[in-house]
Amino acid sequence: MDPSEHVDVQMAIYSKRFNFVFLHVPKSAGISMRTALLASDNDAIEFDNHILASEIVAAIGASEFARAYKFAFVRNPWDRAVGLYHFILSDESHAAHQLTKDMSFPEYLEVYNEKSRSRQTDWTHDADRQLVDFIGRFETLQPDFKKVCQQIGLEGVELPHLNRSKHADYRSYYTRDMREAVARSRAFEVSEFRYEF
Image (cartoon, rainbow, N blue to C red; front, side, top):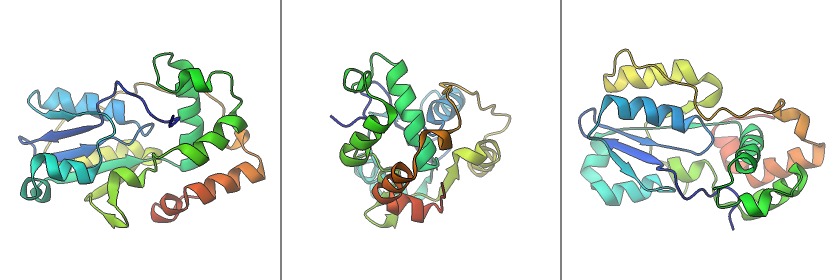
């Protein structure tokens, strides 16, 4: 089982009214953004969990997808792995909770690096080609979300801070070998989004 899967989360939104597609990369403040965006458009279409940009093209049509403003948010891969680990431990309904609940972080990370299909670029790219117009960063969440709102014409939208992880700074979880293992397993996203440990 992929330790990042979660079966009950809607992962993308398409709004005809505001002409946008939001791709929810897990553990990158997506729940907060979805809440704010859906409050602005009750008619927005929510897609099932784990839908990728390339699959939304098929769902809404290439011309609609091309016209829409497409955006996603990403997170430092080392920080994201720690956040995902704590999220799985705290959520007994998560598909990977039983598998993960007795694992230390180093044990979890080994499985995550080997088995997880959820590279952040899976949501934003088709192979090596970026499909979204804007990629915001978790680390600059508020100003990047404000840019998105200005682009799609949403005014006065407040971004709530939901689903917040409570853990120590991610750097404290890693040994040198663990840090390098994530750099290898997430090499494309580290390079594409210019992240450093």
